[in-house]
Image 1 (cartoon, rainbow, N blue to C red):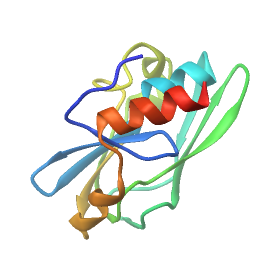
Image 2 (image 1 turned 45 degrees about the horizontal axis):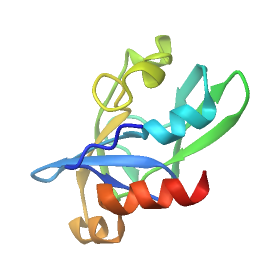
Image 3 (image 1 turned 120 degrees about the vertical axis):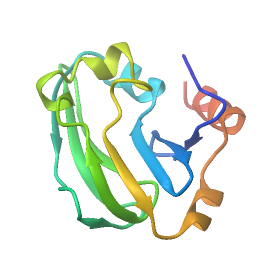
Length: 129
């Protein structure tokens, strides 16, 4: 399981990579392993939408389960990975690079403090296995 050290993680298995005031969001390697072969992704927000921390913004389905994807931060959606719904299997092969879901301009950067760092997330995942 890959856990980049420069990312933050939610206990609902979303990751956040922050660059200035922009948060790139996706689902973790742990989450994609649990889901197995991802076959469908529906991003339910649009550019310029405001989203709140812990609100659902996408749905993912695999051959064995379906799940909601929640935003680990609040802000304005500034970009959506438009090619991902046509190639949801990228989440299985590369959840941290090509399979990002949305980019958000942070409205409350202090929300990042409630997320887990890589070491804490790795421990959290090992306790669930």
